[in-house]
Amino acid sequence: MTVNVGVIGTGNIGQDHIRRLSGTLSGARVVAVTDIDAVRAESVTAALPGARAVPRAQELITAADVDAVVVTSWGPTHEEYVLASIAAGKPVFCEKPLATTADACLRIVDAEQAHGSRLVQIGFMRRYDPGYRAMREVVTRGGIGAPLVVHCAHRNPSVPESYTSDMAVTDTAIHELDTLRWLLDEDFSSAQVLKAKRTTRAAAHLADPQILLLETVSGVRIDIEVFVNCAYGYDIGCEVVGEFGVVRLSDPVDVAVRRAGGHTVAITQDWRDRFGRAFDVEMQEWVDSVAAGHLTGPSSWDGYAAAVTADALLEAARENRVAAVSMKDRPDFYA
Ligand code: NAP
Figure 1 (cartoon, rainbow, N blue to C red):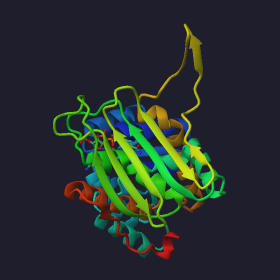
Figure 2: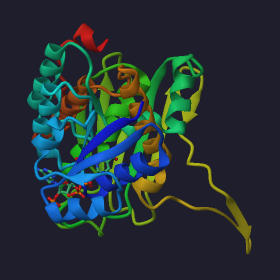
Figure 3: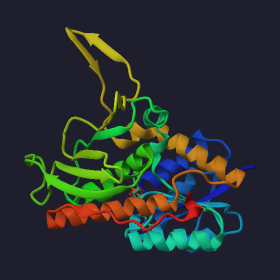
């Protein structure tokens, strides 16, 4: 079976996913695209034989030849398009965030349960990264004993002037918030934010770096350094310290060069390079699960959990205190 996909939002990641679905992967083709910028949508279809540009997202979602929807428009539009896809009974892959508030995520969770089977997958692609998968395997089989402490770093070379201190949580560390819940297989109980000495490269309004502190329900302590003007590269670190061992995320495999008295390995410069393979695996597994009629990837409950944790971190930063992460009980539907 070939899954006919409609894509809403043809910006950066929308075009990446369109290329993936049309070239790199198997079992899918893009048949329709839409964007608030109709010219951009038209120009994308010019390189996509068999695909058409549709004026409105609602029209794309209900089109008879669209089997499944990919939402890659900007965050505030996600709730509307995910709910419309559920109403149409169509599987929908939504880039993070699932929605911009925890309440909006719960509306999606409720609609999906009312539908009766899973339709929503959220784009937390780190779960598909070979390094994180290998780490999880070690943790899950007890290879380092019970996890006690986790150290993470999320560094970007630079960010635009429009990037705010809150975005360090909602746009950047949101990936760690999901990955760590998945890696440790438990929820968080509290959150705190510490501001470090500010880099001279940050805009005047931006706290950078920041240290996010989380505690899990069982008491695992986590620190996440978010440093978005580190200058030297896109560098992702994660180390889990267990009862009798440590597991550390390795850098993507690359060649090492030894010359002129030095030994160097390149550092990736952006998220596309660092997680390109993870995006491919993520999207292929989504296509395969849609074809099989059984979604298995990160769910709308995972999107809700990330939103609740992000809200707690923002509250902690605003009020300069430790904030509780208060989640509703997980419905059996998402067990
Ligand atoms: P982008 O380049 O700004 O692309 C978003 C596109 O959606 C733009 O073409 C935008 O048009 C269009 N759009 C805005 N409102 C729309 C609407 N109501 N209906 C249809 N199209 C609309 O942003 P991006 O970097 O691709 O990010 C898109 C989403 O993916 C965001 O939620 C982002 O957080 C997520 N993302 C995830 C990852 C990841 O690591 N998983 C990486 C990058 C992005 P205009 O430009 O005219 O507004």
